[in-house]
Image: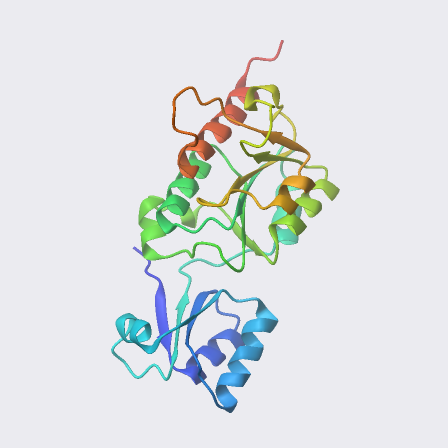
Length: 248
């Protein structure tokens, strides 16, 4: 089992960023001052790294070592660039299937979705640099190792990825209850990308507006929504169903 690597200390984190290590998240002590901290802040902004500003007690719980006010998690996987991933997949497949996760925050939901994505032949998962669930040891475990098999790309904004997919001839379908269109009225037989939203807020309004199609799942009970990993599985298997139907 690959585990997330934890590093601590301002200089160590700066060197890791400069070395292009796949940093998932940086925890910075609130009110941290000094030249090195300002240098770190600049690198964090430049690279769009997911960052939380926390009290020193949080950092002390993360590590008992001399953290100097900074702790970072390095991902156990290497992330793709969106353009590289899409070009590579399009060169091999006529009808690729991608998955976009709009600031999904729970690592276990993330892991479960990665596992389903691998089982349904998803060609790549796109997440946002800031606000997205990190790839941790829990993510890897919940994915049953699928996180090492499905390419994952990070982007500044999911909406920008939507526009890139559309420019590449890939239809974008957003999963939302804010529509009258059923998932079963949407075609996934061609090049497709499915957008799933965060657990609490769903898909951002700007991403919903940018999508080619909005689709919802029929809910016949009193509860108004499914767990996002379950809903994602239904969407992906509907794509599989359509793509494996006998040709008439």
